[in-house]
Length: 110
Length: 114
Image 1 (cartoon, rainbow over the protein chains, first blue to last red):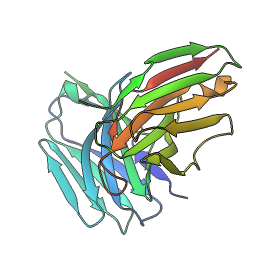
Image 2 (image 1 turned 45 degrees about the vertical axis):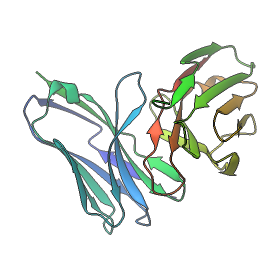
Image 3 (image 1 turned 135 degrees about the vertical axis):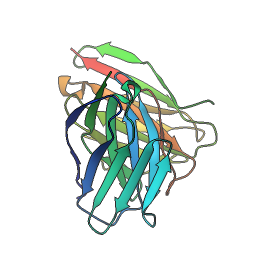
Image 4 (image 1 turned 45 degrees about the horizontal axis):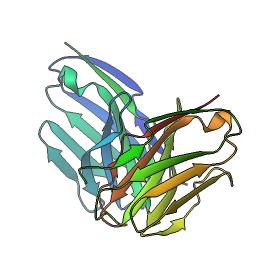
């Protein structure tokens, strides 16, 4: 059974700092890995999707990497802003469903 | 449509009552997924549809839960004889097709069973 773990559970940083969120998964037989953002009381917004054959994806200040063999992914956020404050969820796809981690709650202080 | 929509946005019900949650996927998306997010827990998969068929119902917590999809579009998740542990946010997502596509999520329905 696939299990996804995210570290840290919560993170508080000052504005402008670069930060890394970590995701690990137990079964490397995945189709892809996706990072989402969830704001309080809202649904999920897809940030980046990395196919199993890819090593990384970039969008603006966000960069996600994938090491499938070791079962790890990182989400790098450059020059963090207060608007980045949210819960960040990592999800892996094996078969036709996503398996989610518990998330990292990020707070960026101005 | 512009995105995945869900209704109602909030639902409060009494223990033992039945509830229906609705999901309107993005137009043209053939795959539709239901997830549940309980307080203090992560998102868990419930069921997915490819067209009107549900090949994988493995995530449904009990036989009180059922879902259907008609016309390859709208889906309804029904919970019969609700229990307090059913209280959660129920999220719907859709994707262009089942496979390697990005899933787009709706805002969710917040269900509270008293």
